[in-house]
Length: 265
Image (cartoon, rainbow, N blue to C red):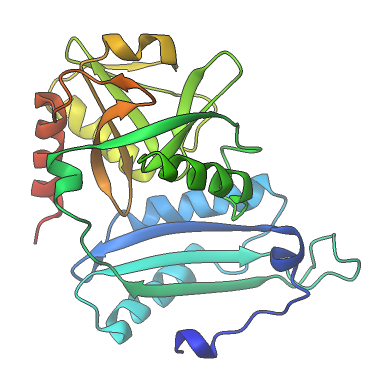
């Protein structure tokens, strides 16, 4: 079905209340990257939001694989979405919920993003339920628009004590003394994050799970964020703080190279 043929009711509480869960992954060629992990996380998001998955894992896998073949893209982005459905009172999730899969072509991002790094801004804004991947990004979208005015690509969510958790659609990592540091609690457990941690273990790079305060940023040697679409993006500036020497550091480079070696066709 073409994009302009797809329809959802205006009475669906995804539209009225922003109530829906989703997951996102991509393929490398025709092979979906960690599809099992993404479906498991999708089901966990549904459970946390009090929703029952419309289809089984096996059925979703079949639909995804059929969609990849029919789409004919070189690389494919895939979104799994389940909404609360059309509600009698405009608030309570329906017993009949809507599930659909959206497939569209994956494109490369500008190479300078990976060779030069990007800037981020912090925002004292916490996600309501970080363990569930929901469609409710309204507050984050508003903050990102402000950040882009000053040249930042995205925001980092912080608490009132200025501890960094994650970016709007990404997990955040820093490197200090060749140790990888990332938050363990209060963040969405990214599938690319999981892959990077596994690669770090292969490379004998220690991983420390903790929050990083903004007051520590000037002492960090490197930083980067990870997600399914961008993979690993170096971060060279956060607010007004330069990270390391403002270049892509050696640990980040190793992780990028190893990740590409596992996904290149």
